[in-house]
Length: 285
Image 1: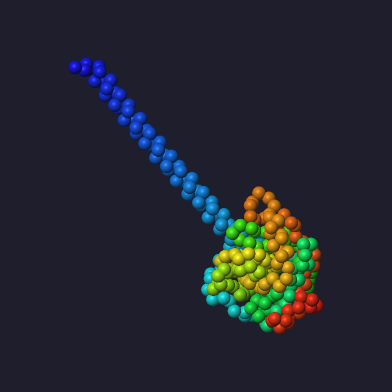
Image 2: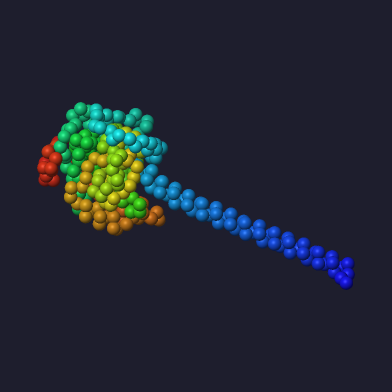
């Protein structure tokens, strides 16, 4: 028959075993919770990264404005507005070259924007019918030699395939001291921005300036960016730049390793669609 001391030892041992089992179970629960939190954080970082990539496809501002354009009917070309910024609101990266003449825009046909870069020529057919305001704005800016000597400051290669140009400061915050209308938004197009499309970068609704991006592979973005035209010649130049990759520690988004400089930029006078001739004399505007 077990002594009283043996029974006490057995009870103490059973109590200790129960305590150890509870502690082991608690430790397992903590590890499961920690693993769940880590997975949630990792997923959140992926989603946040994708959101940053899309939401930062802007320009002309320092990111204070957020693109809140709502998909709907594509804005039809109306009266063009070239809104001058108050001096106190214009960042130091902006340059005042006046504004285009409202009401003087071509409303039909096409114009050809030629970018003579250190990597080769890129010719873009601008759609004066669907995007008259932004076409006229680019003609005005090139007439003022605004883009001459400017870099293509941004290349994206993961999830979004664009080369962004049009900021003489090279910071992503530069542009003229005016903004203009949204036009020709691809609300019913899939993908919204196919290969070859050229669209205006912005920092919110109706904040188009000088920055634009060339799409070198089909890209699905919210339809908040005015399609101003399409590449006519020189897509191979853009693709070669893209294959060179980006600088820095941020994979897939940054300055291109193959630095790009626009030596000169010109826009032709309007001509009938289908008759675009890249050799046509540039506009005198």
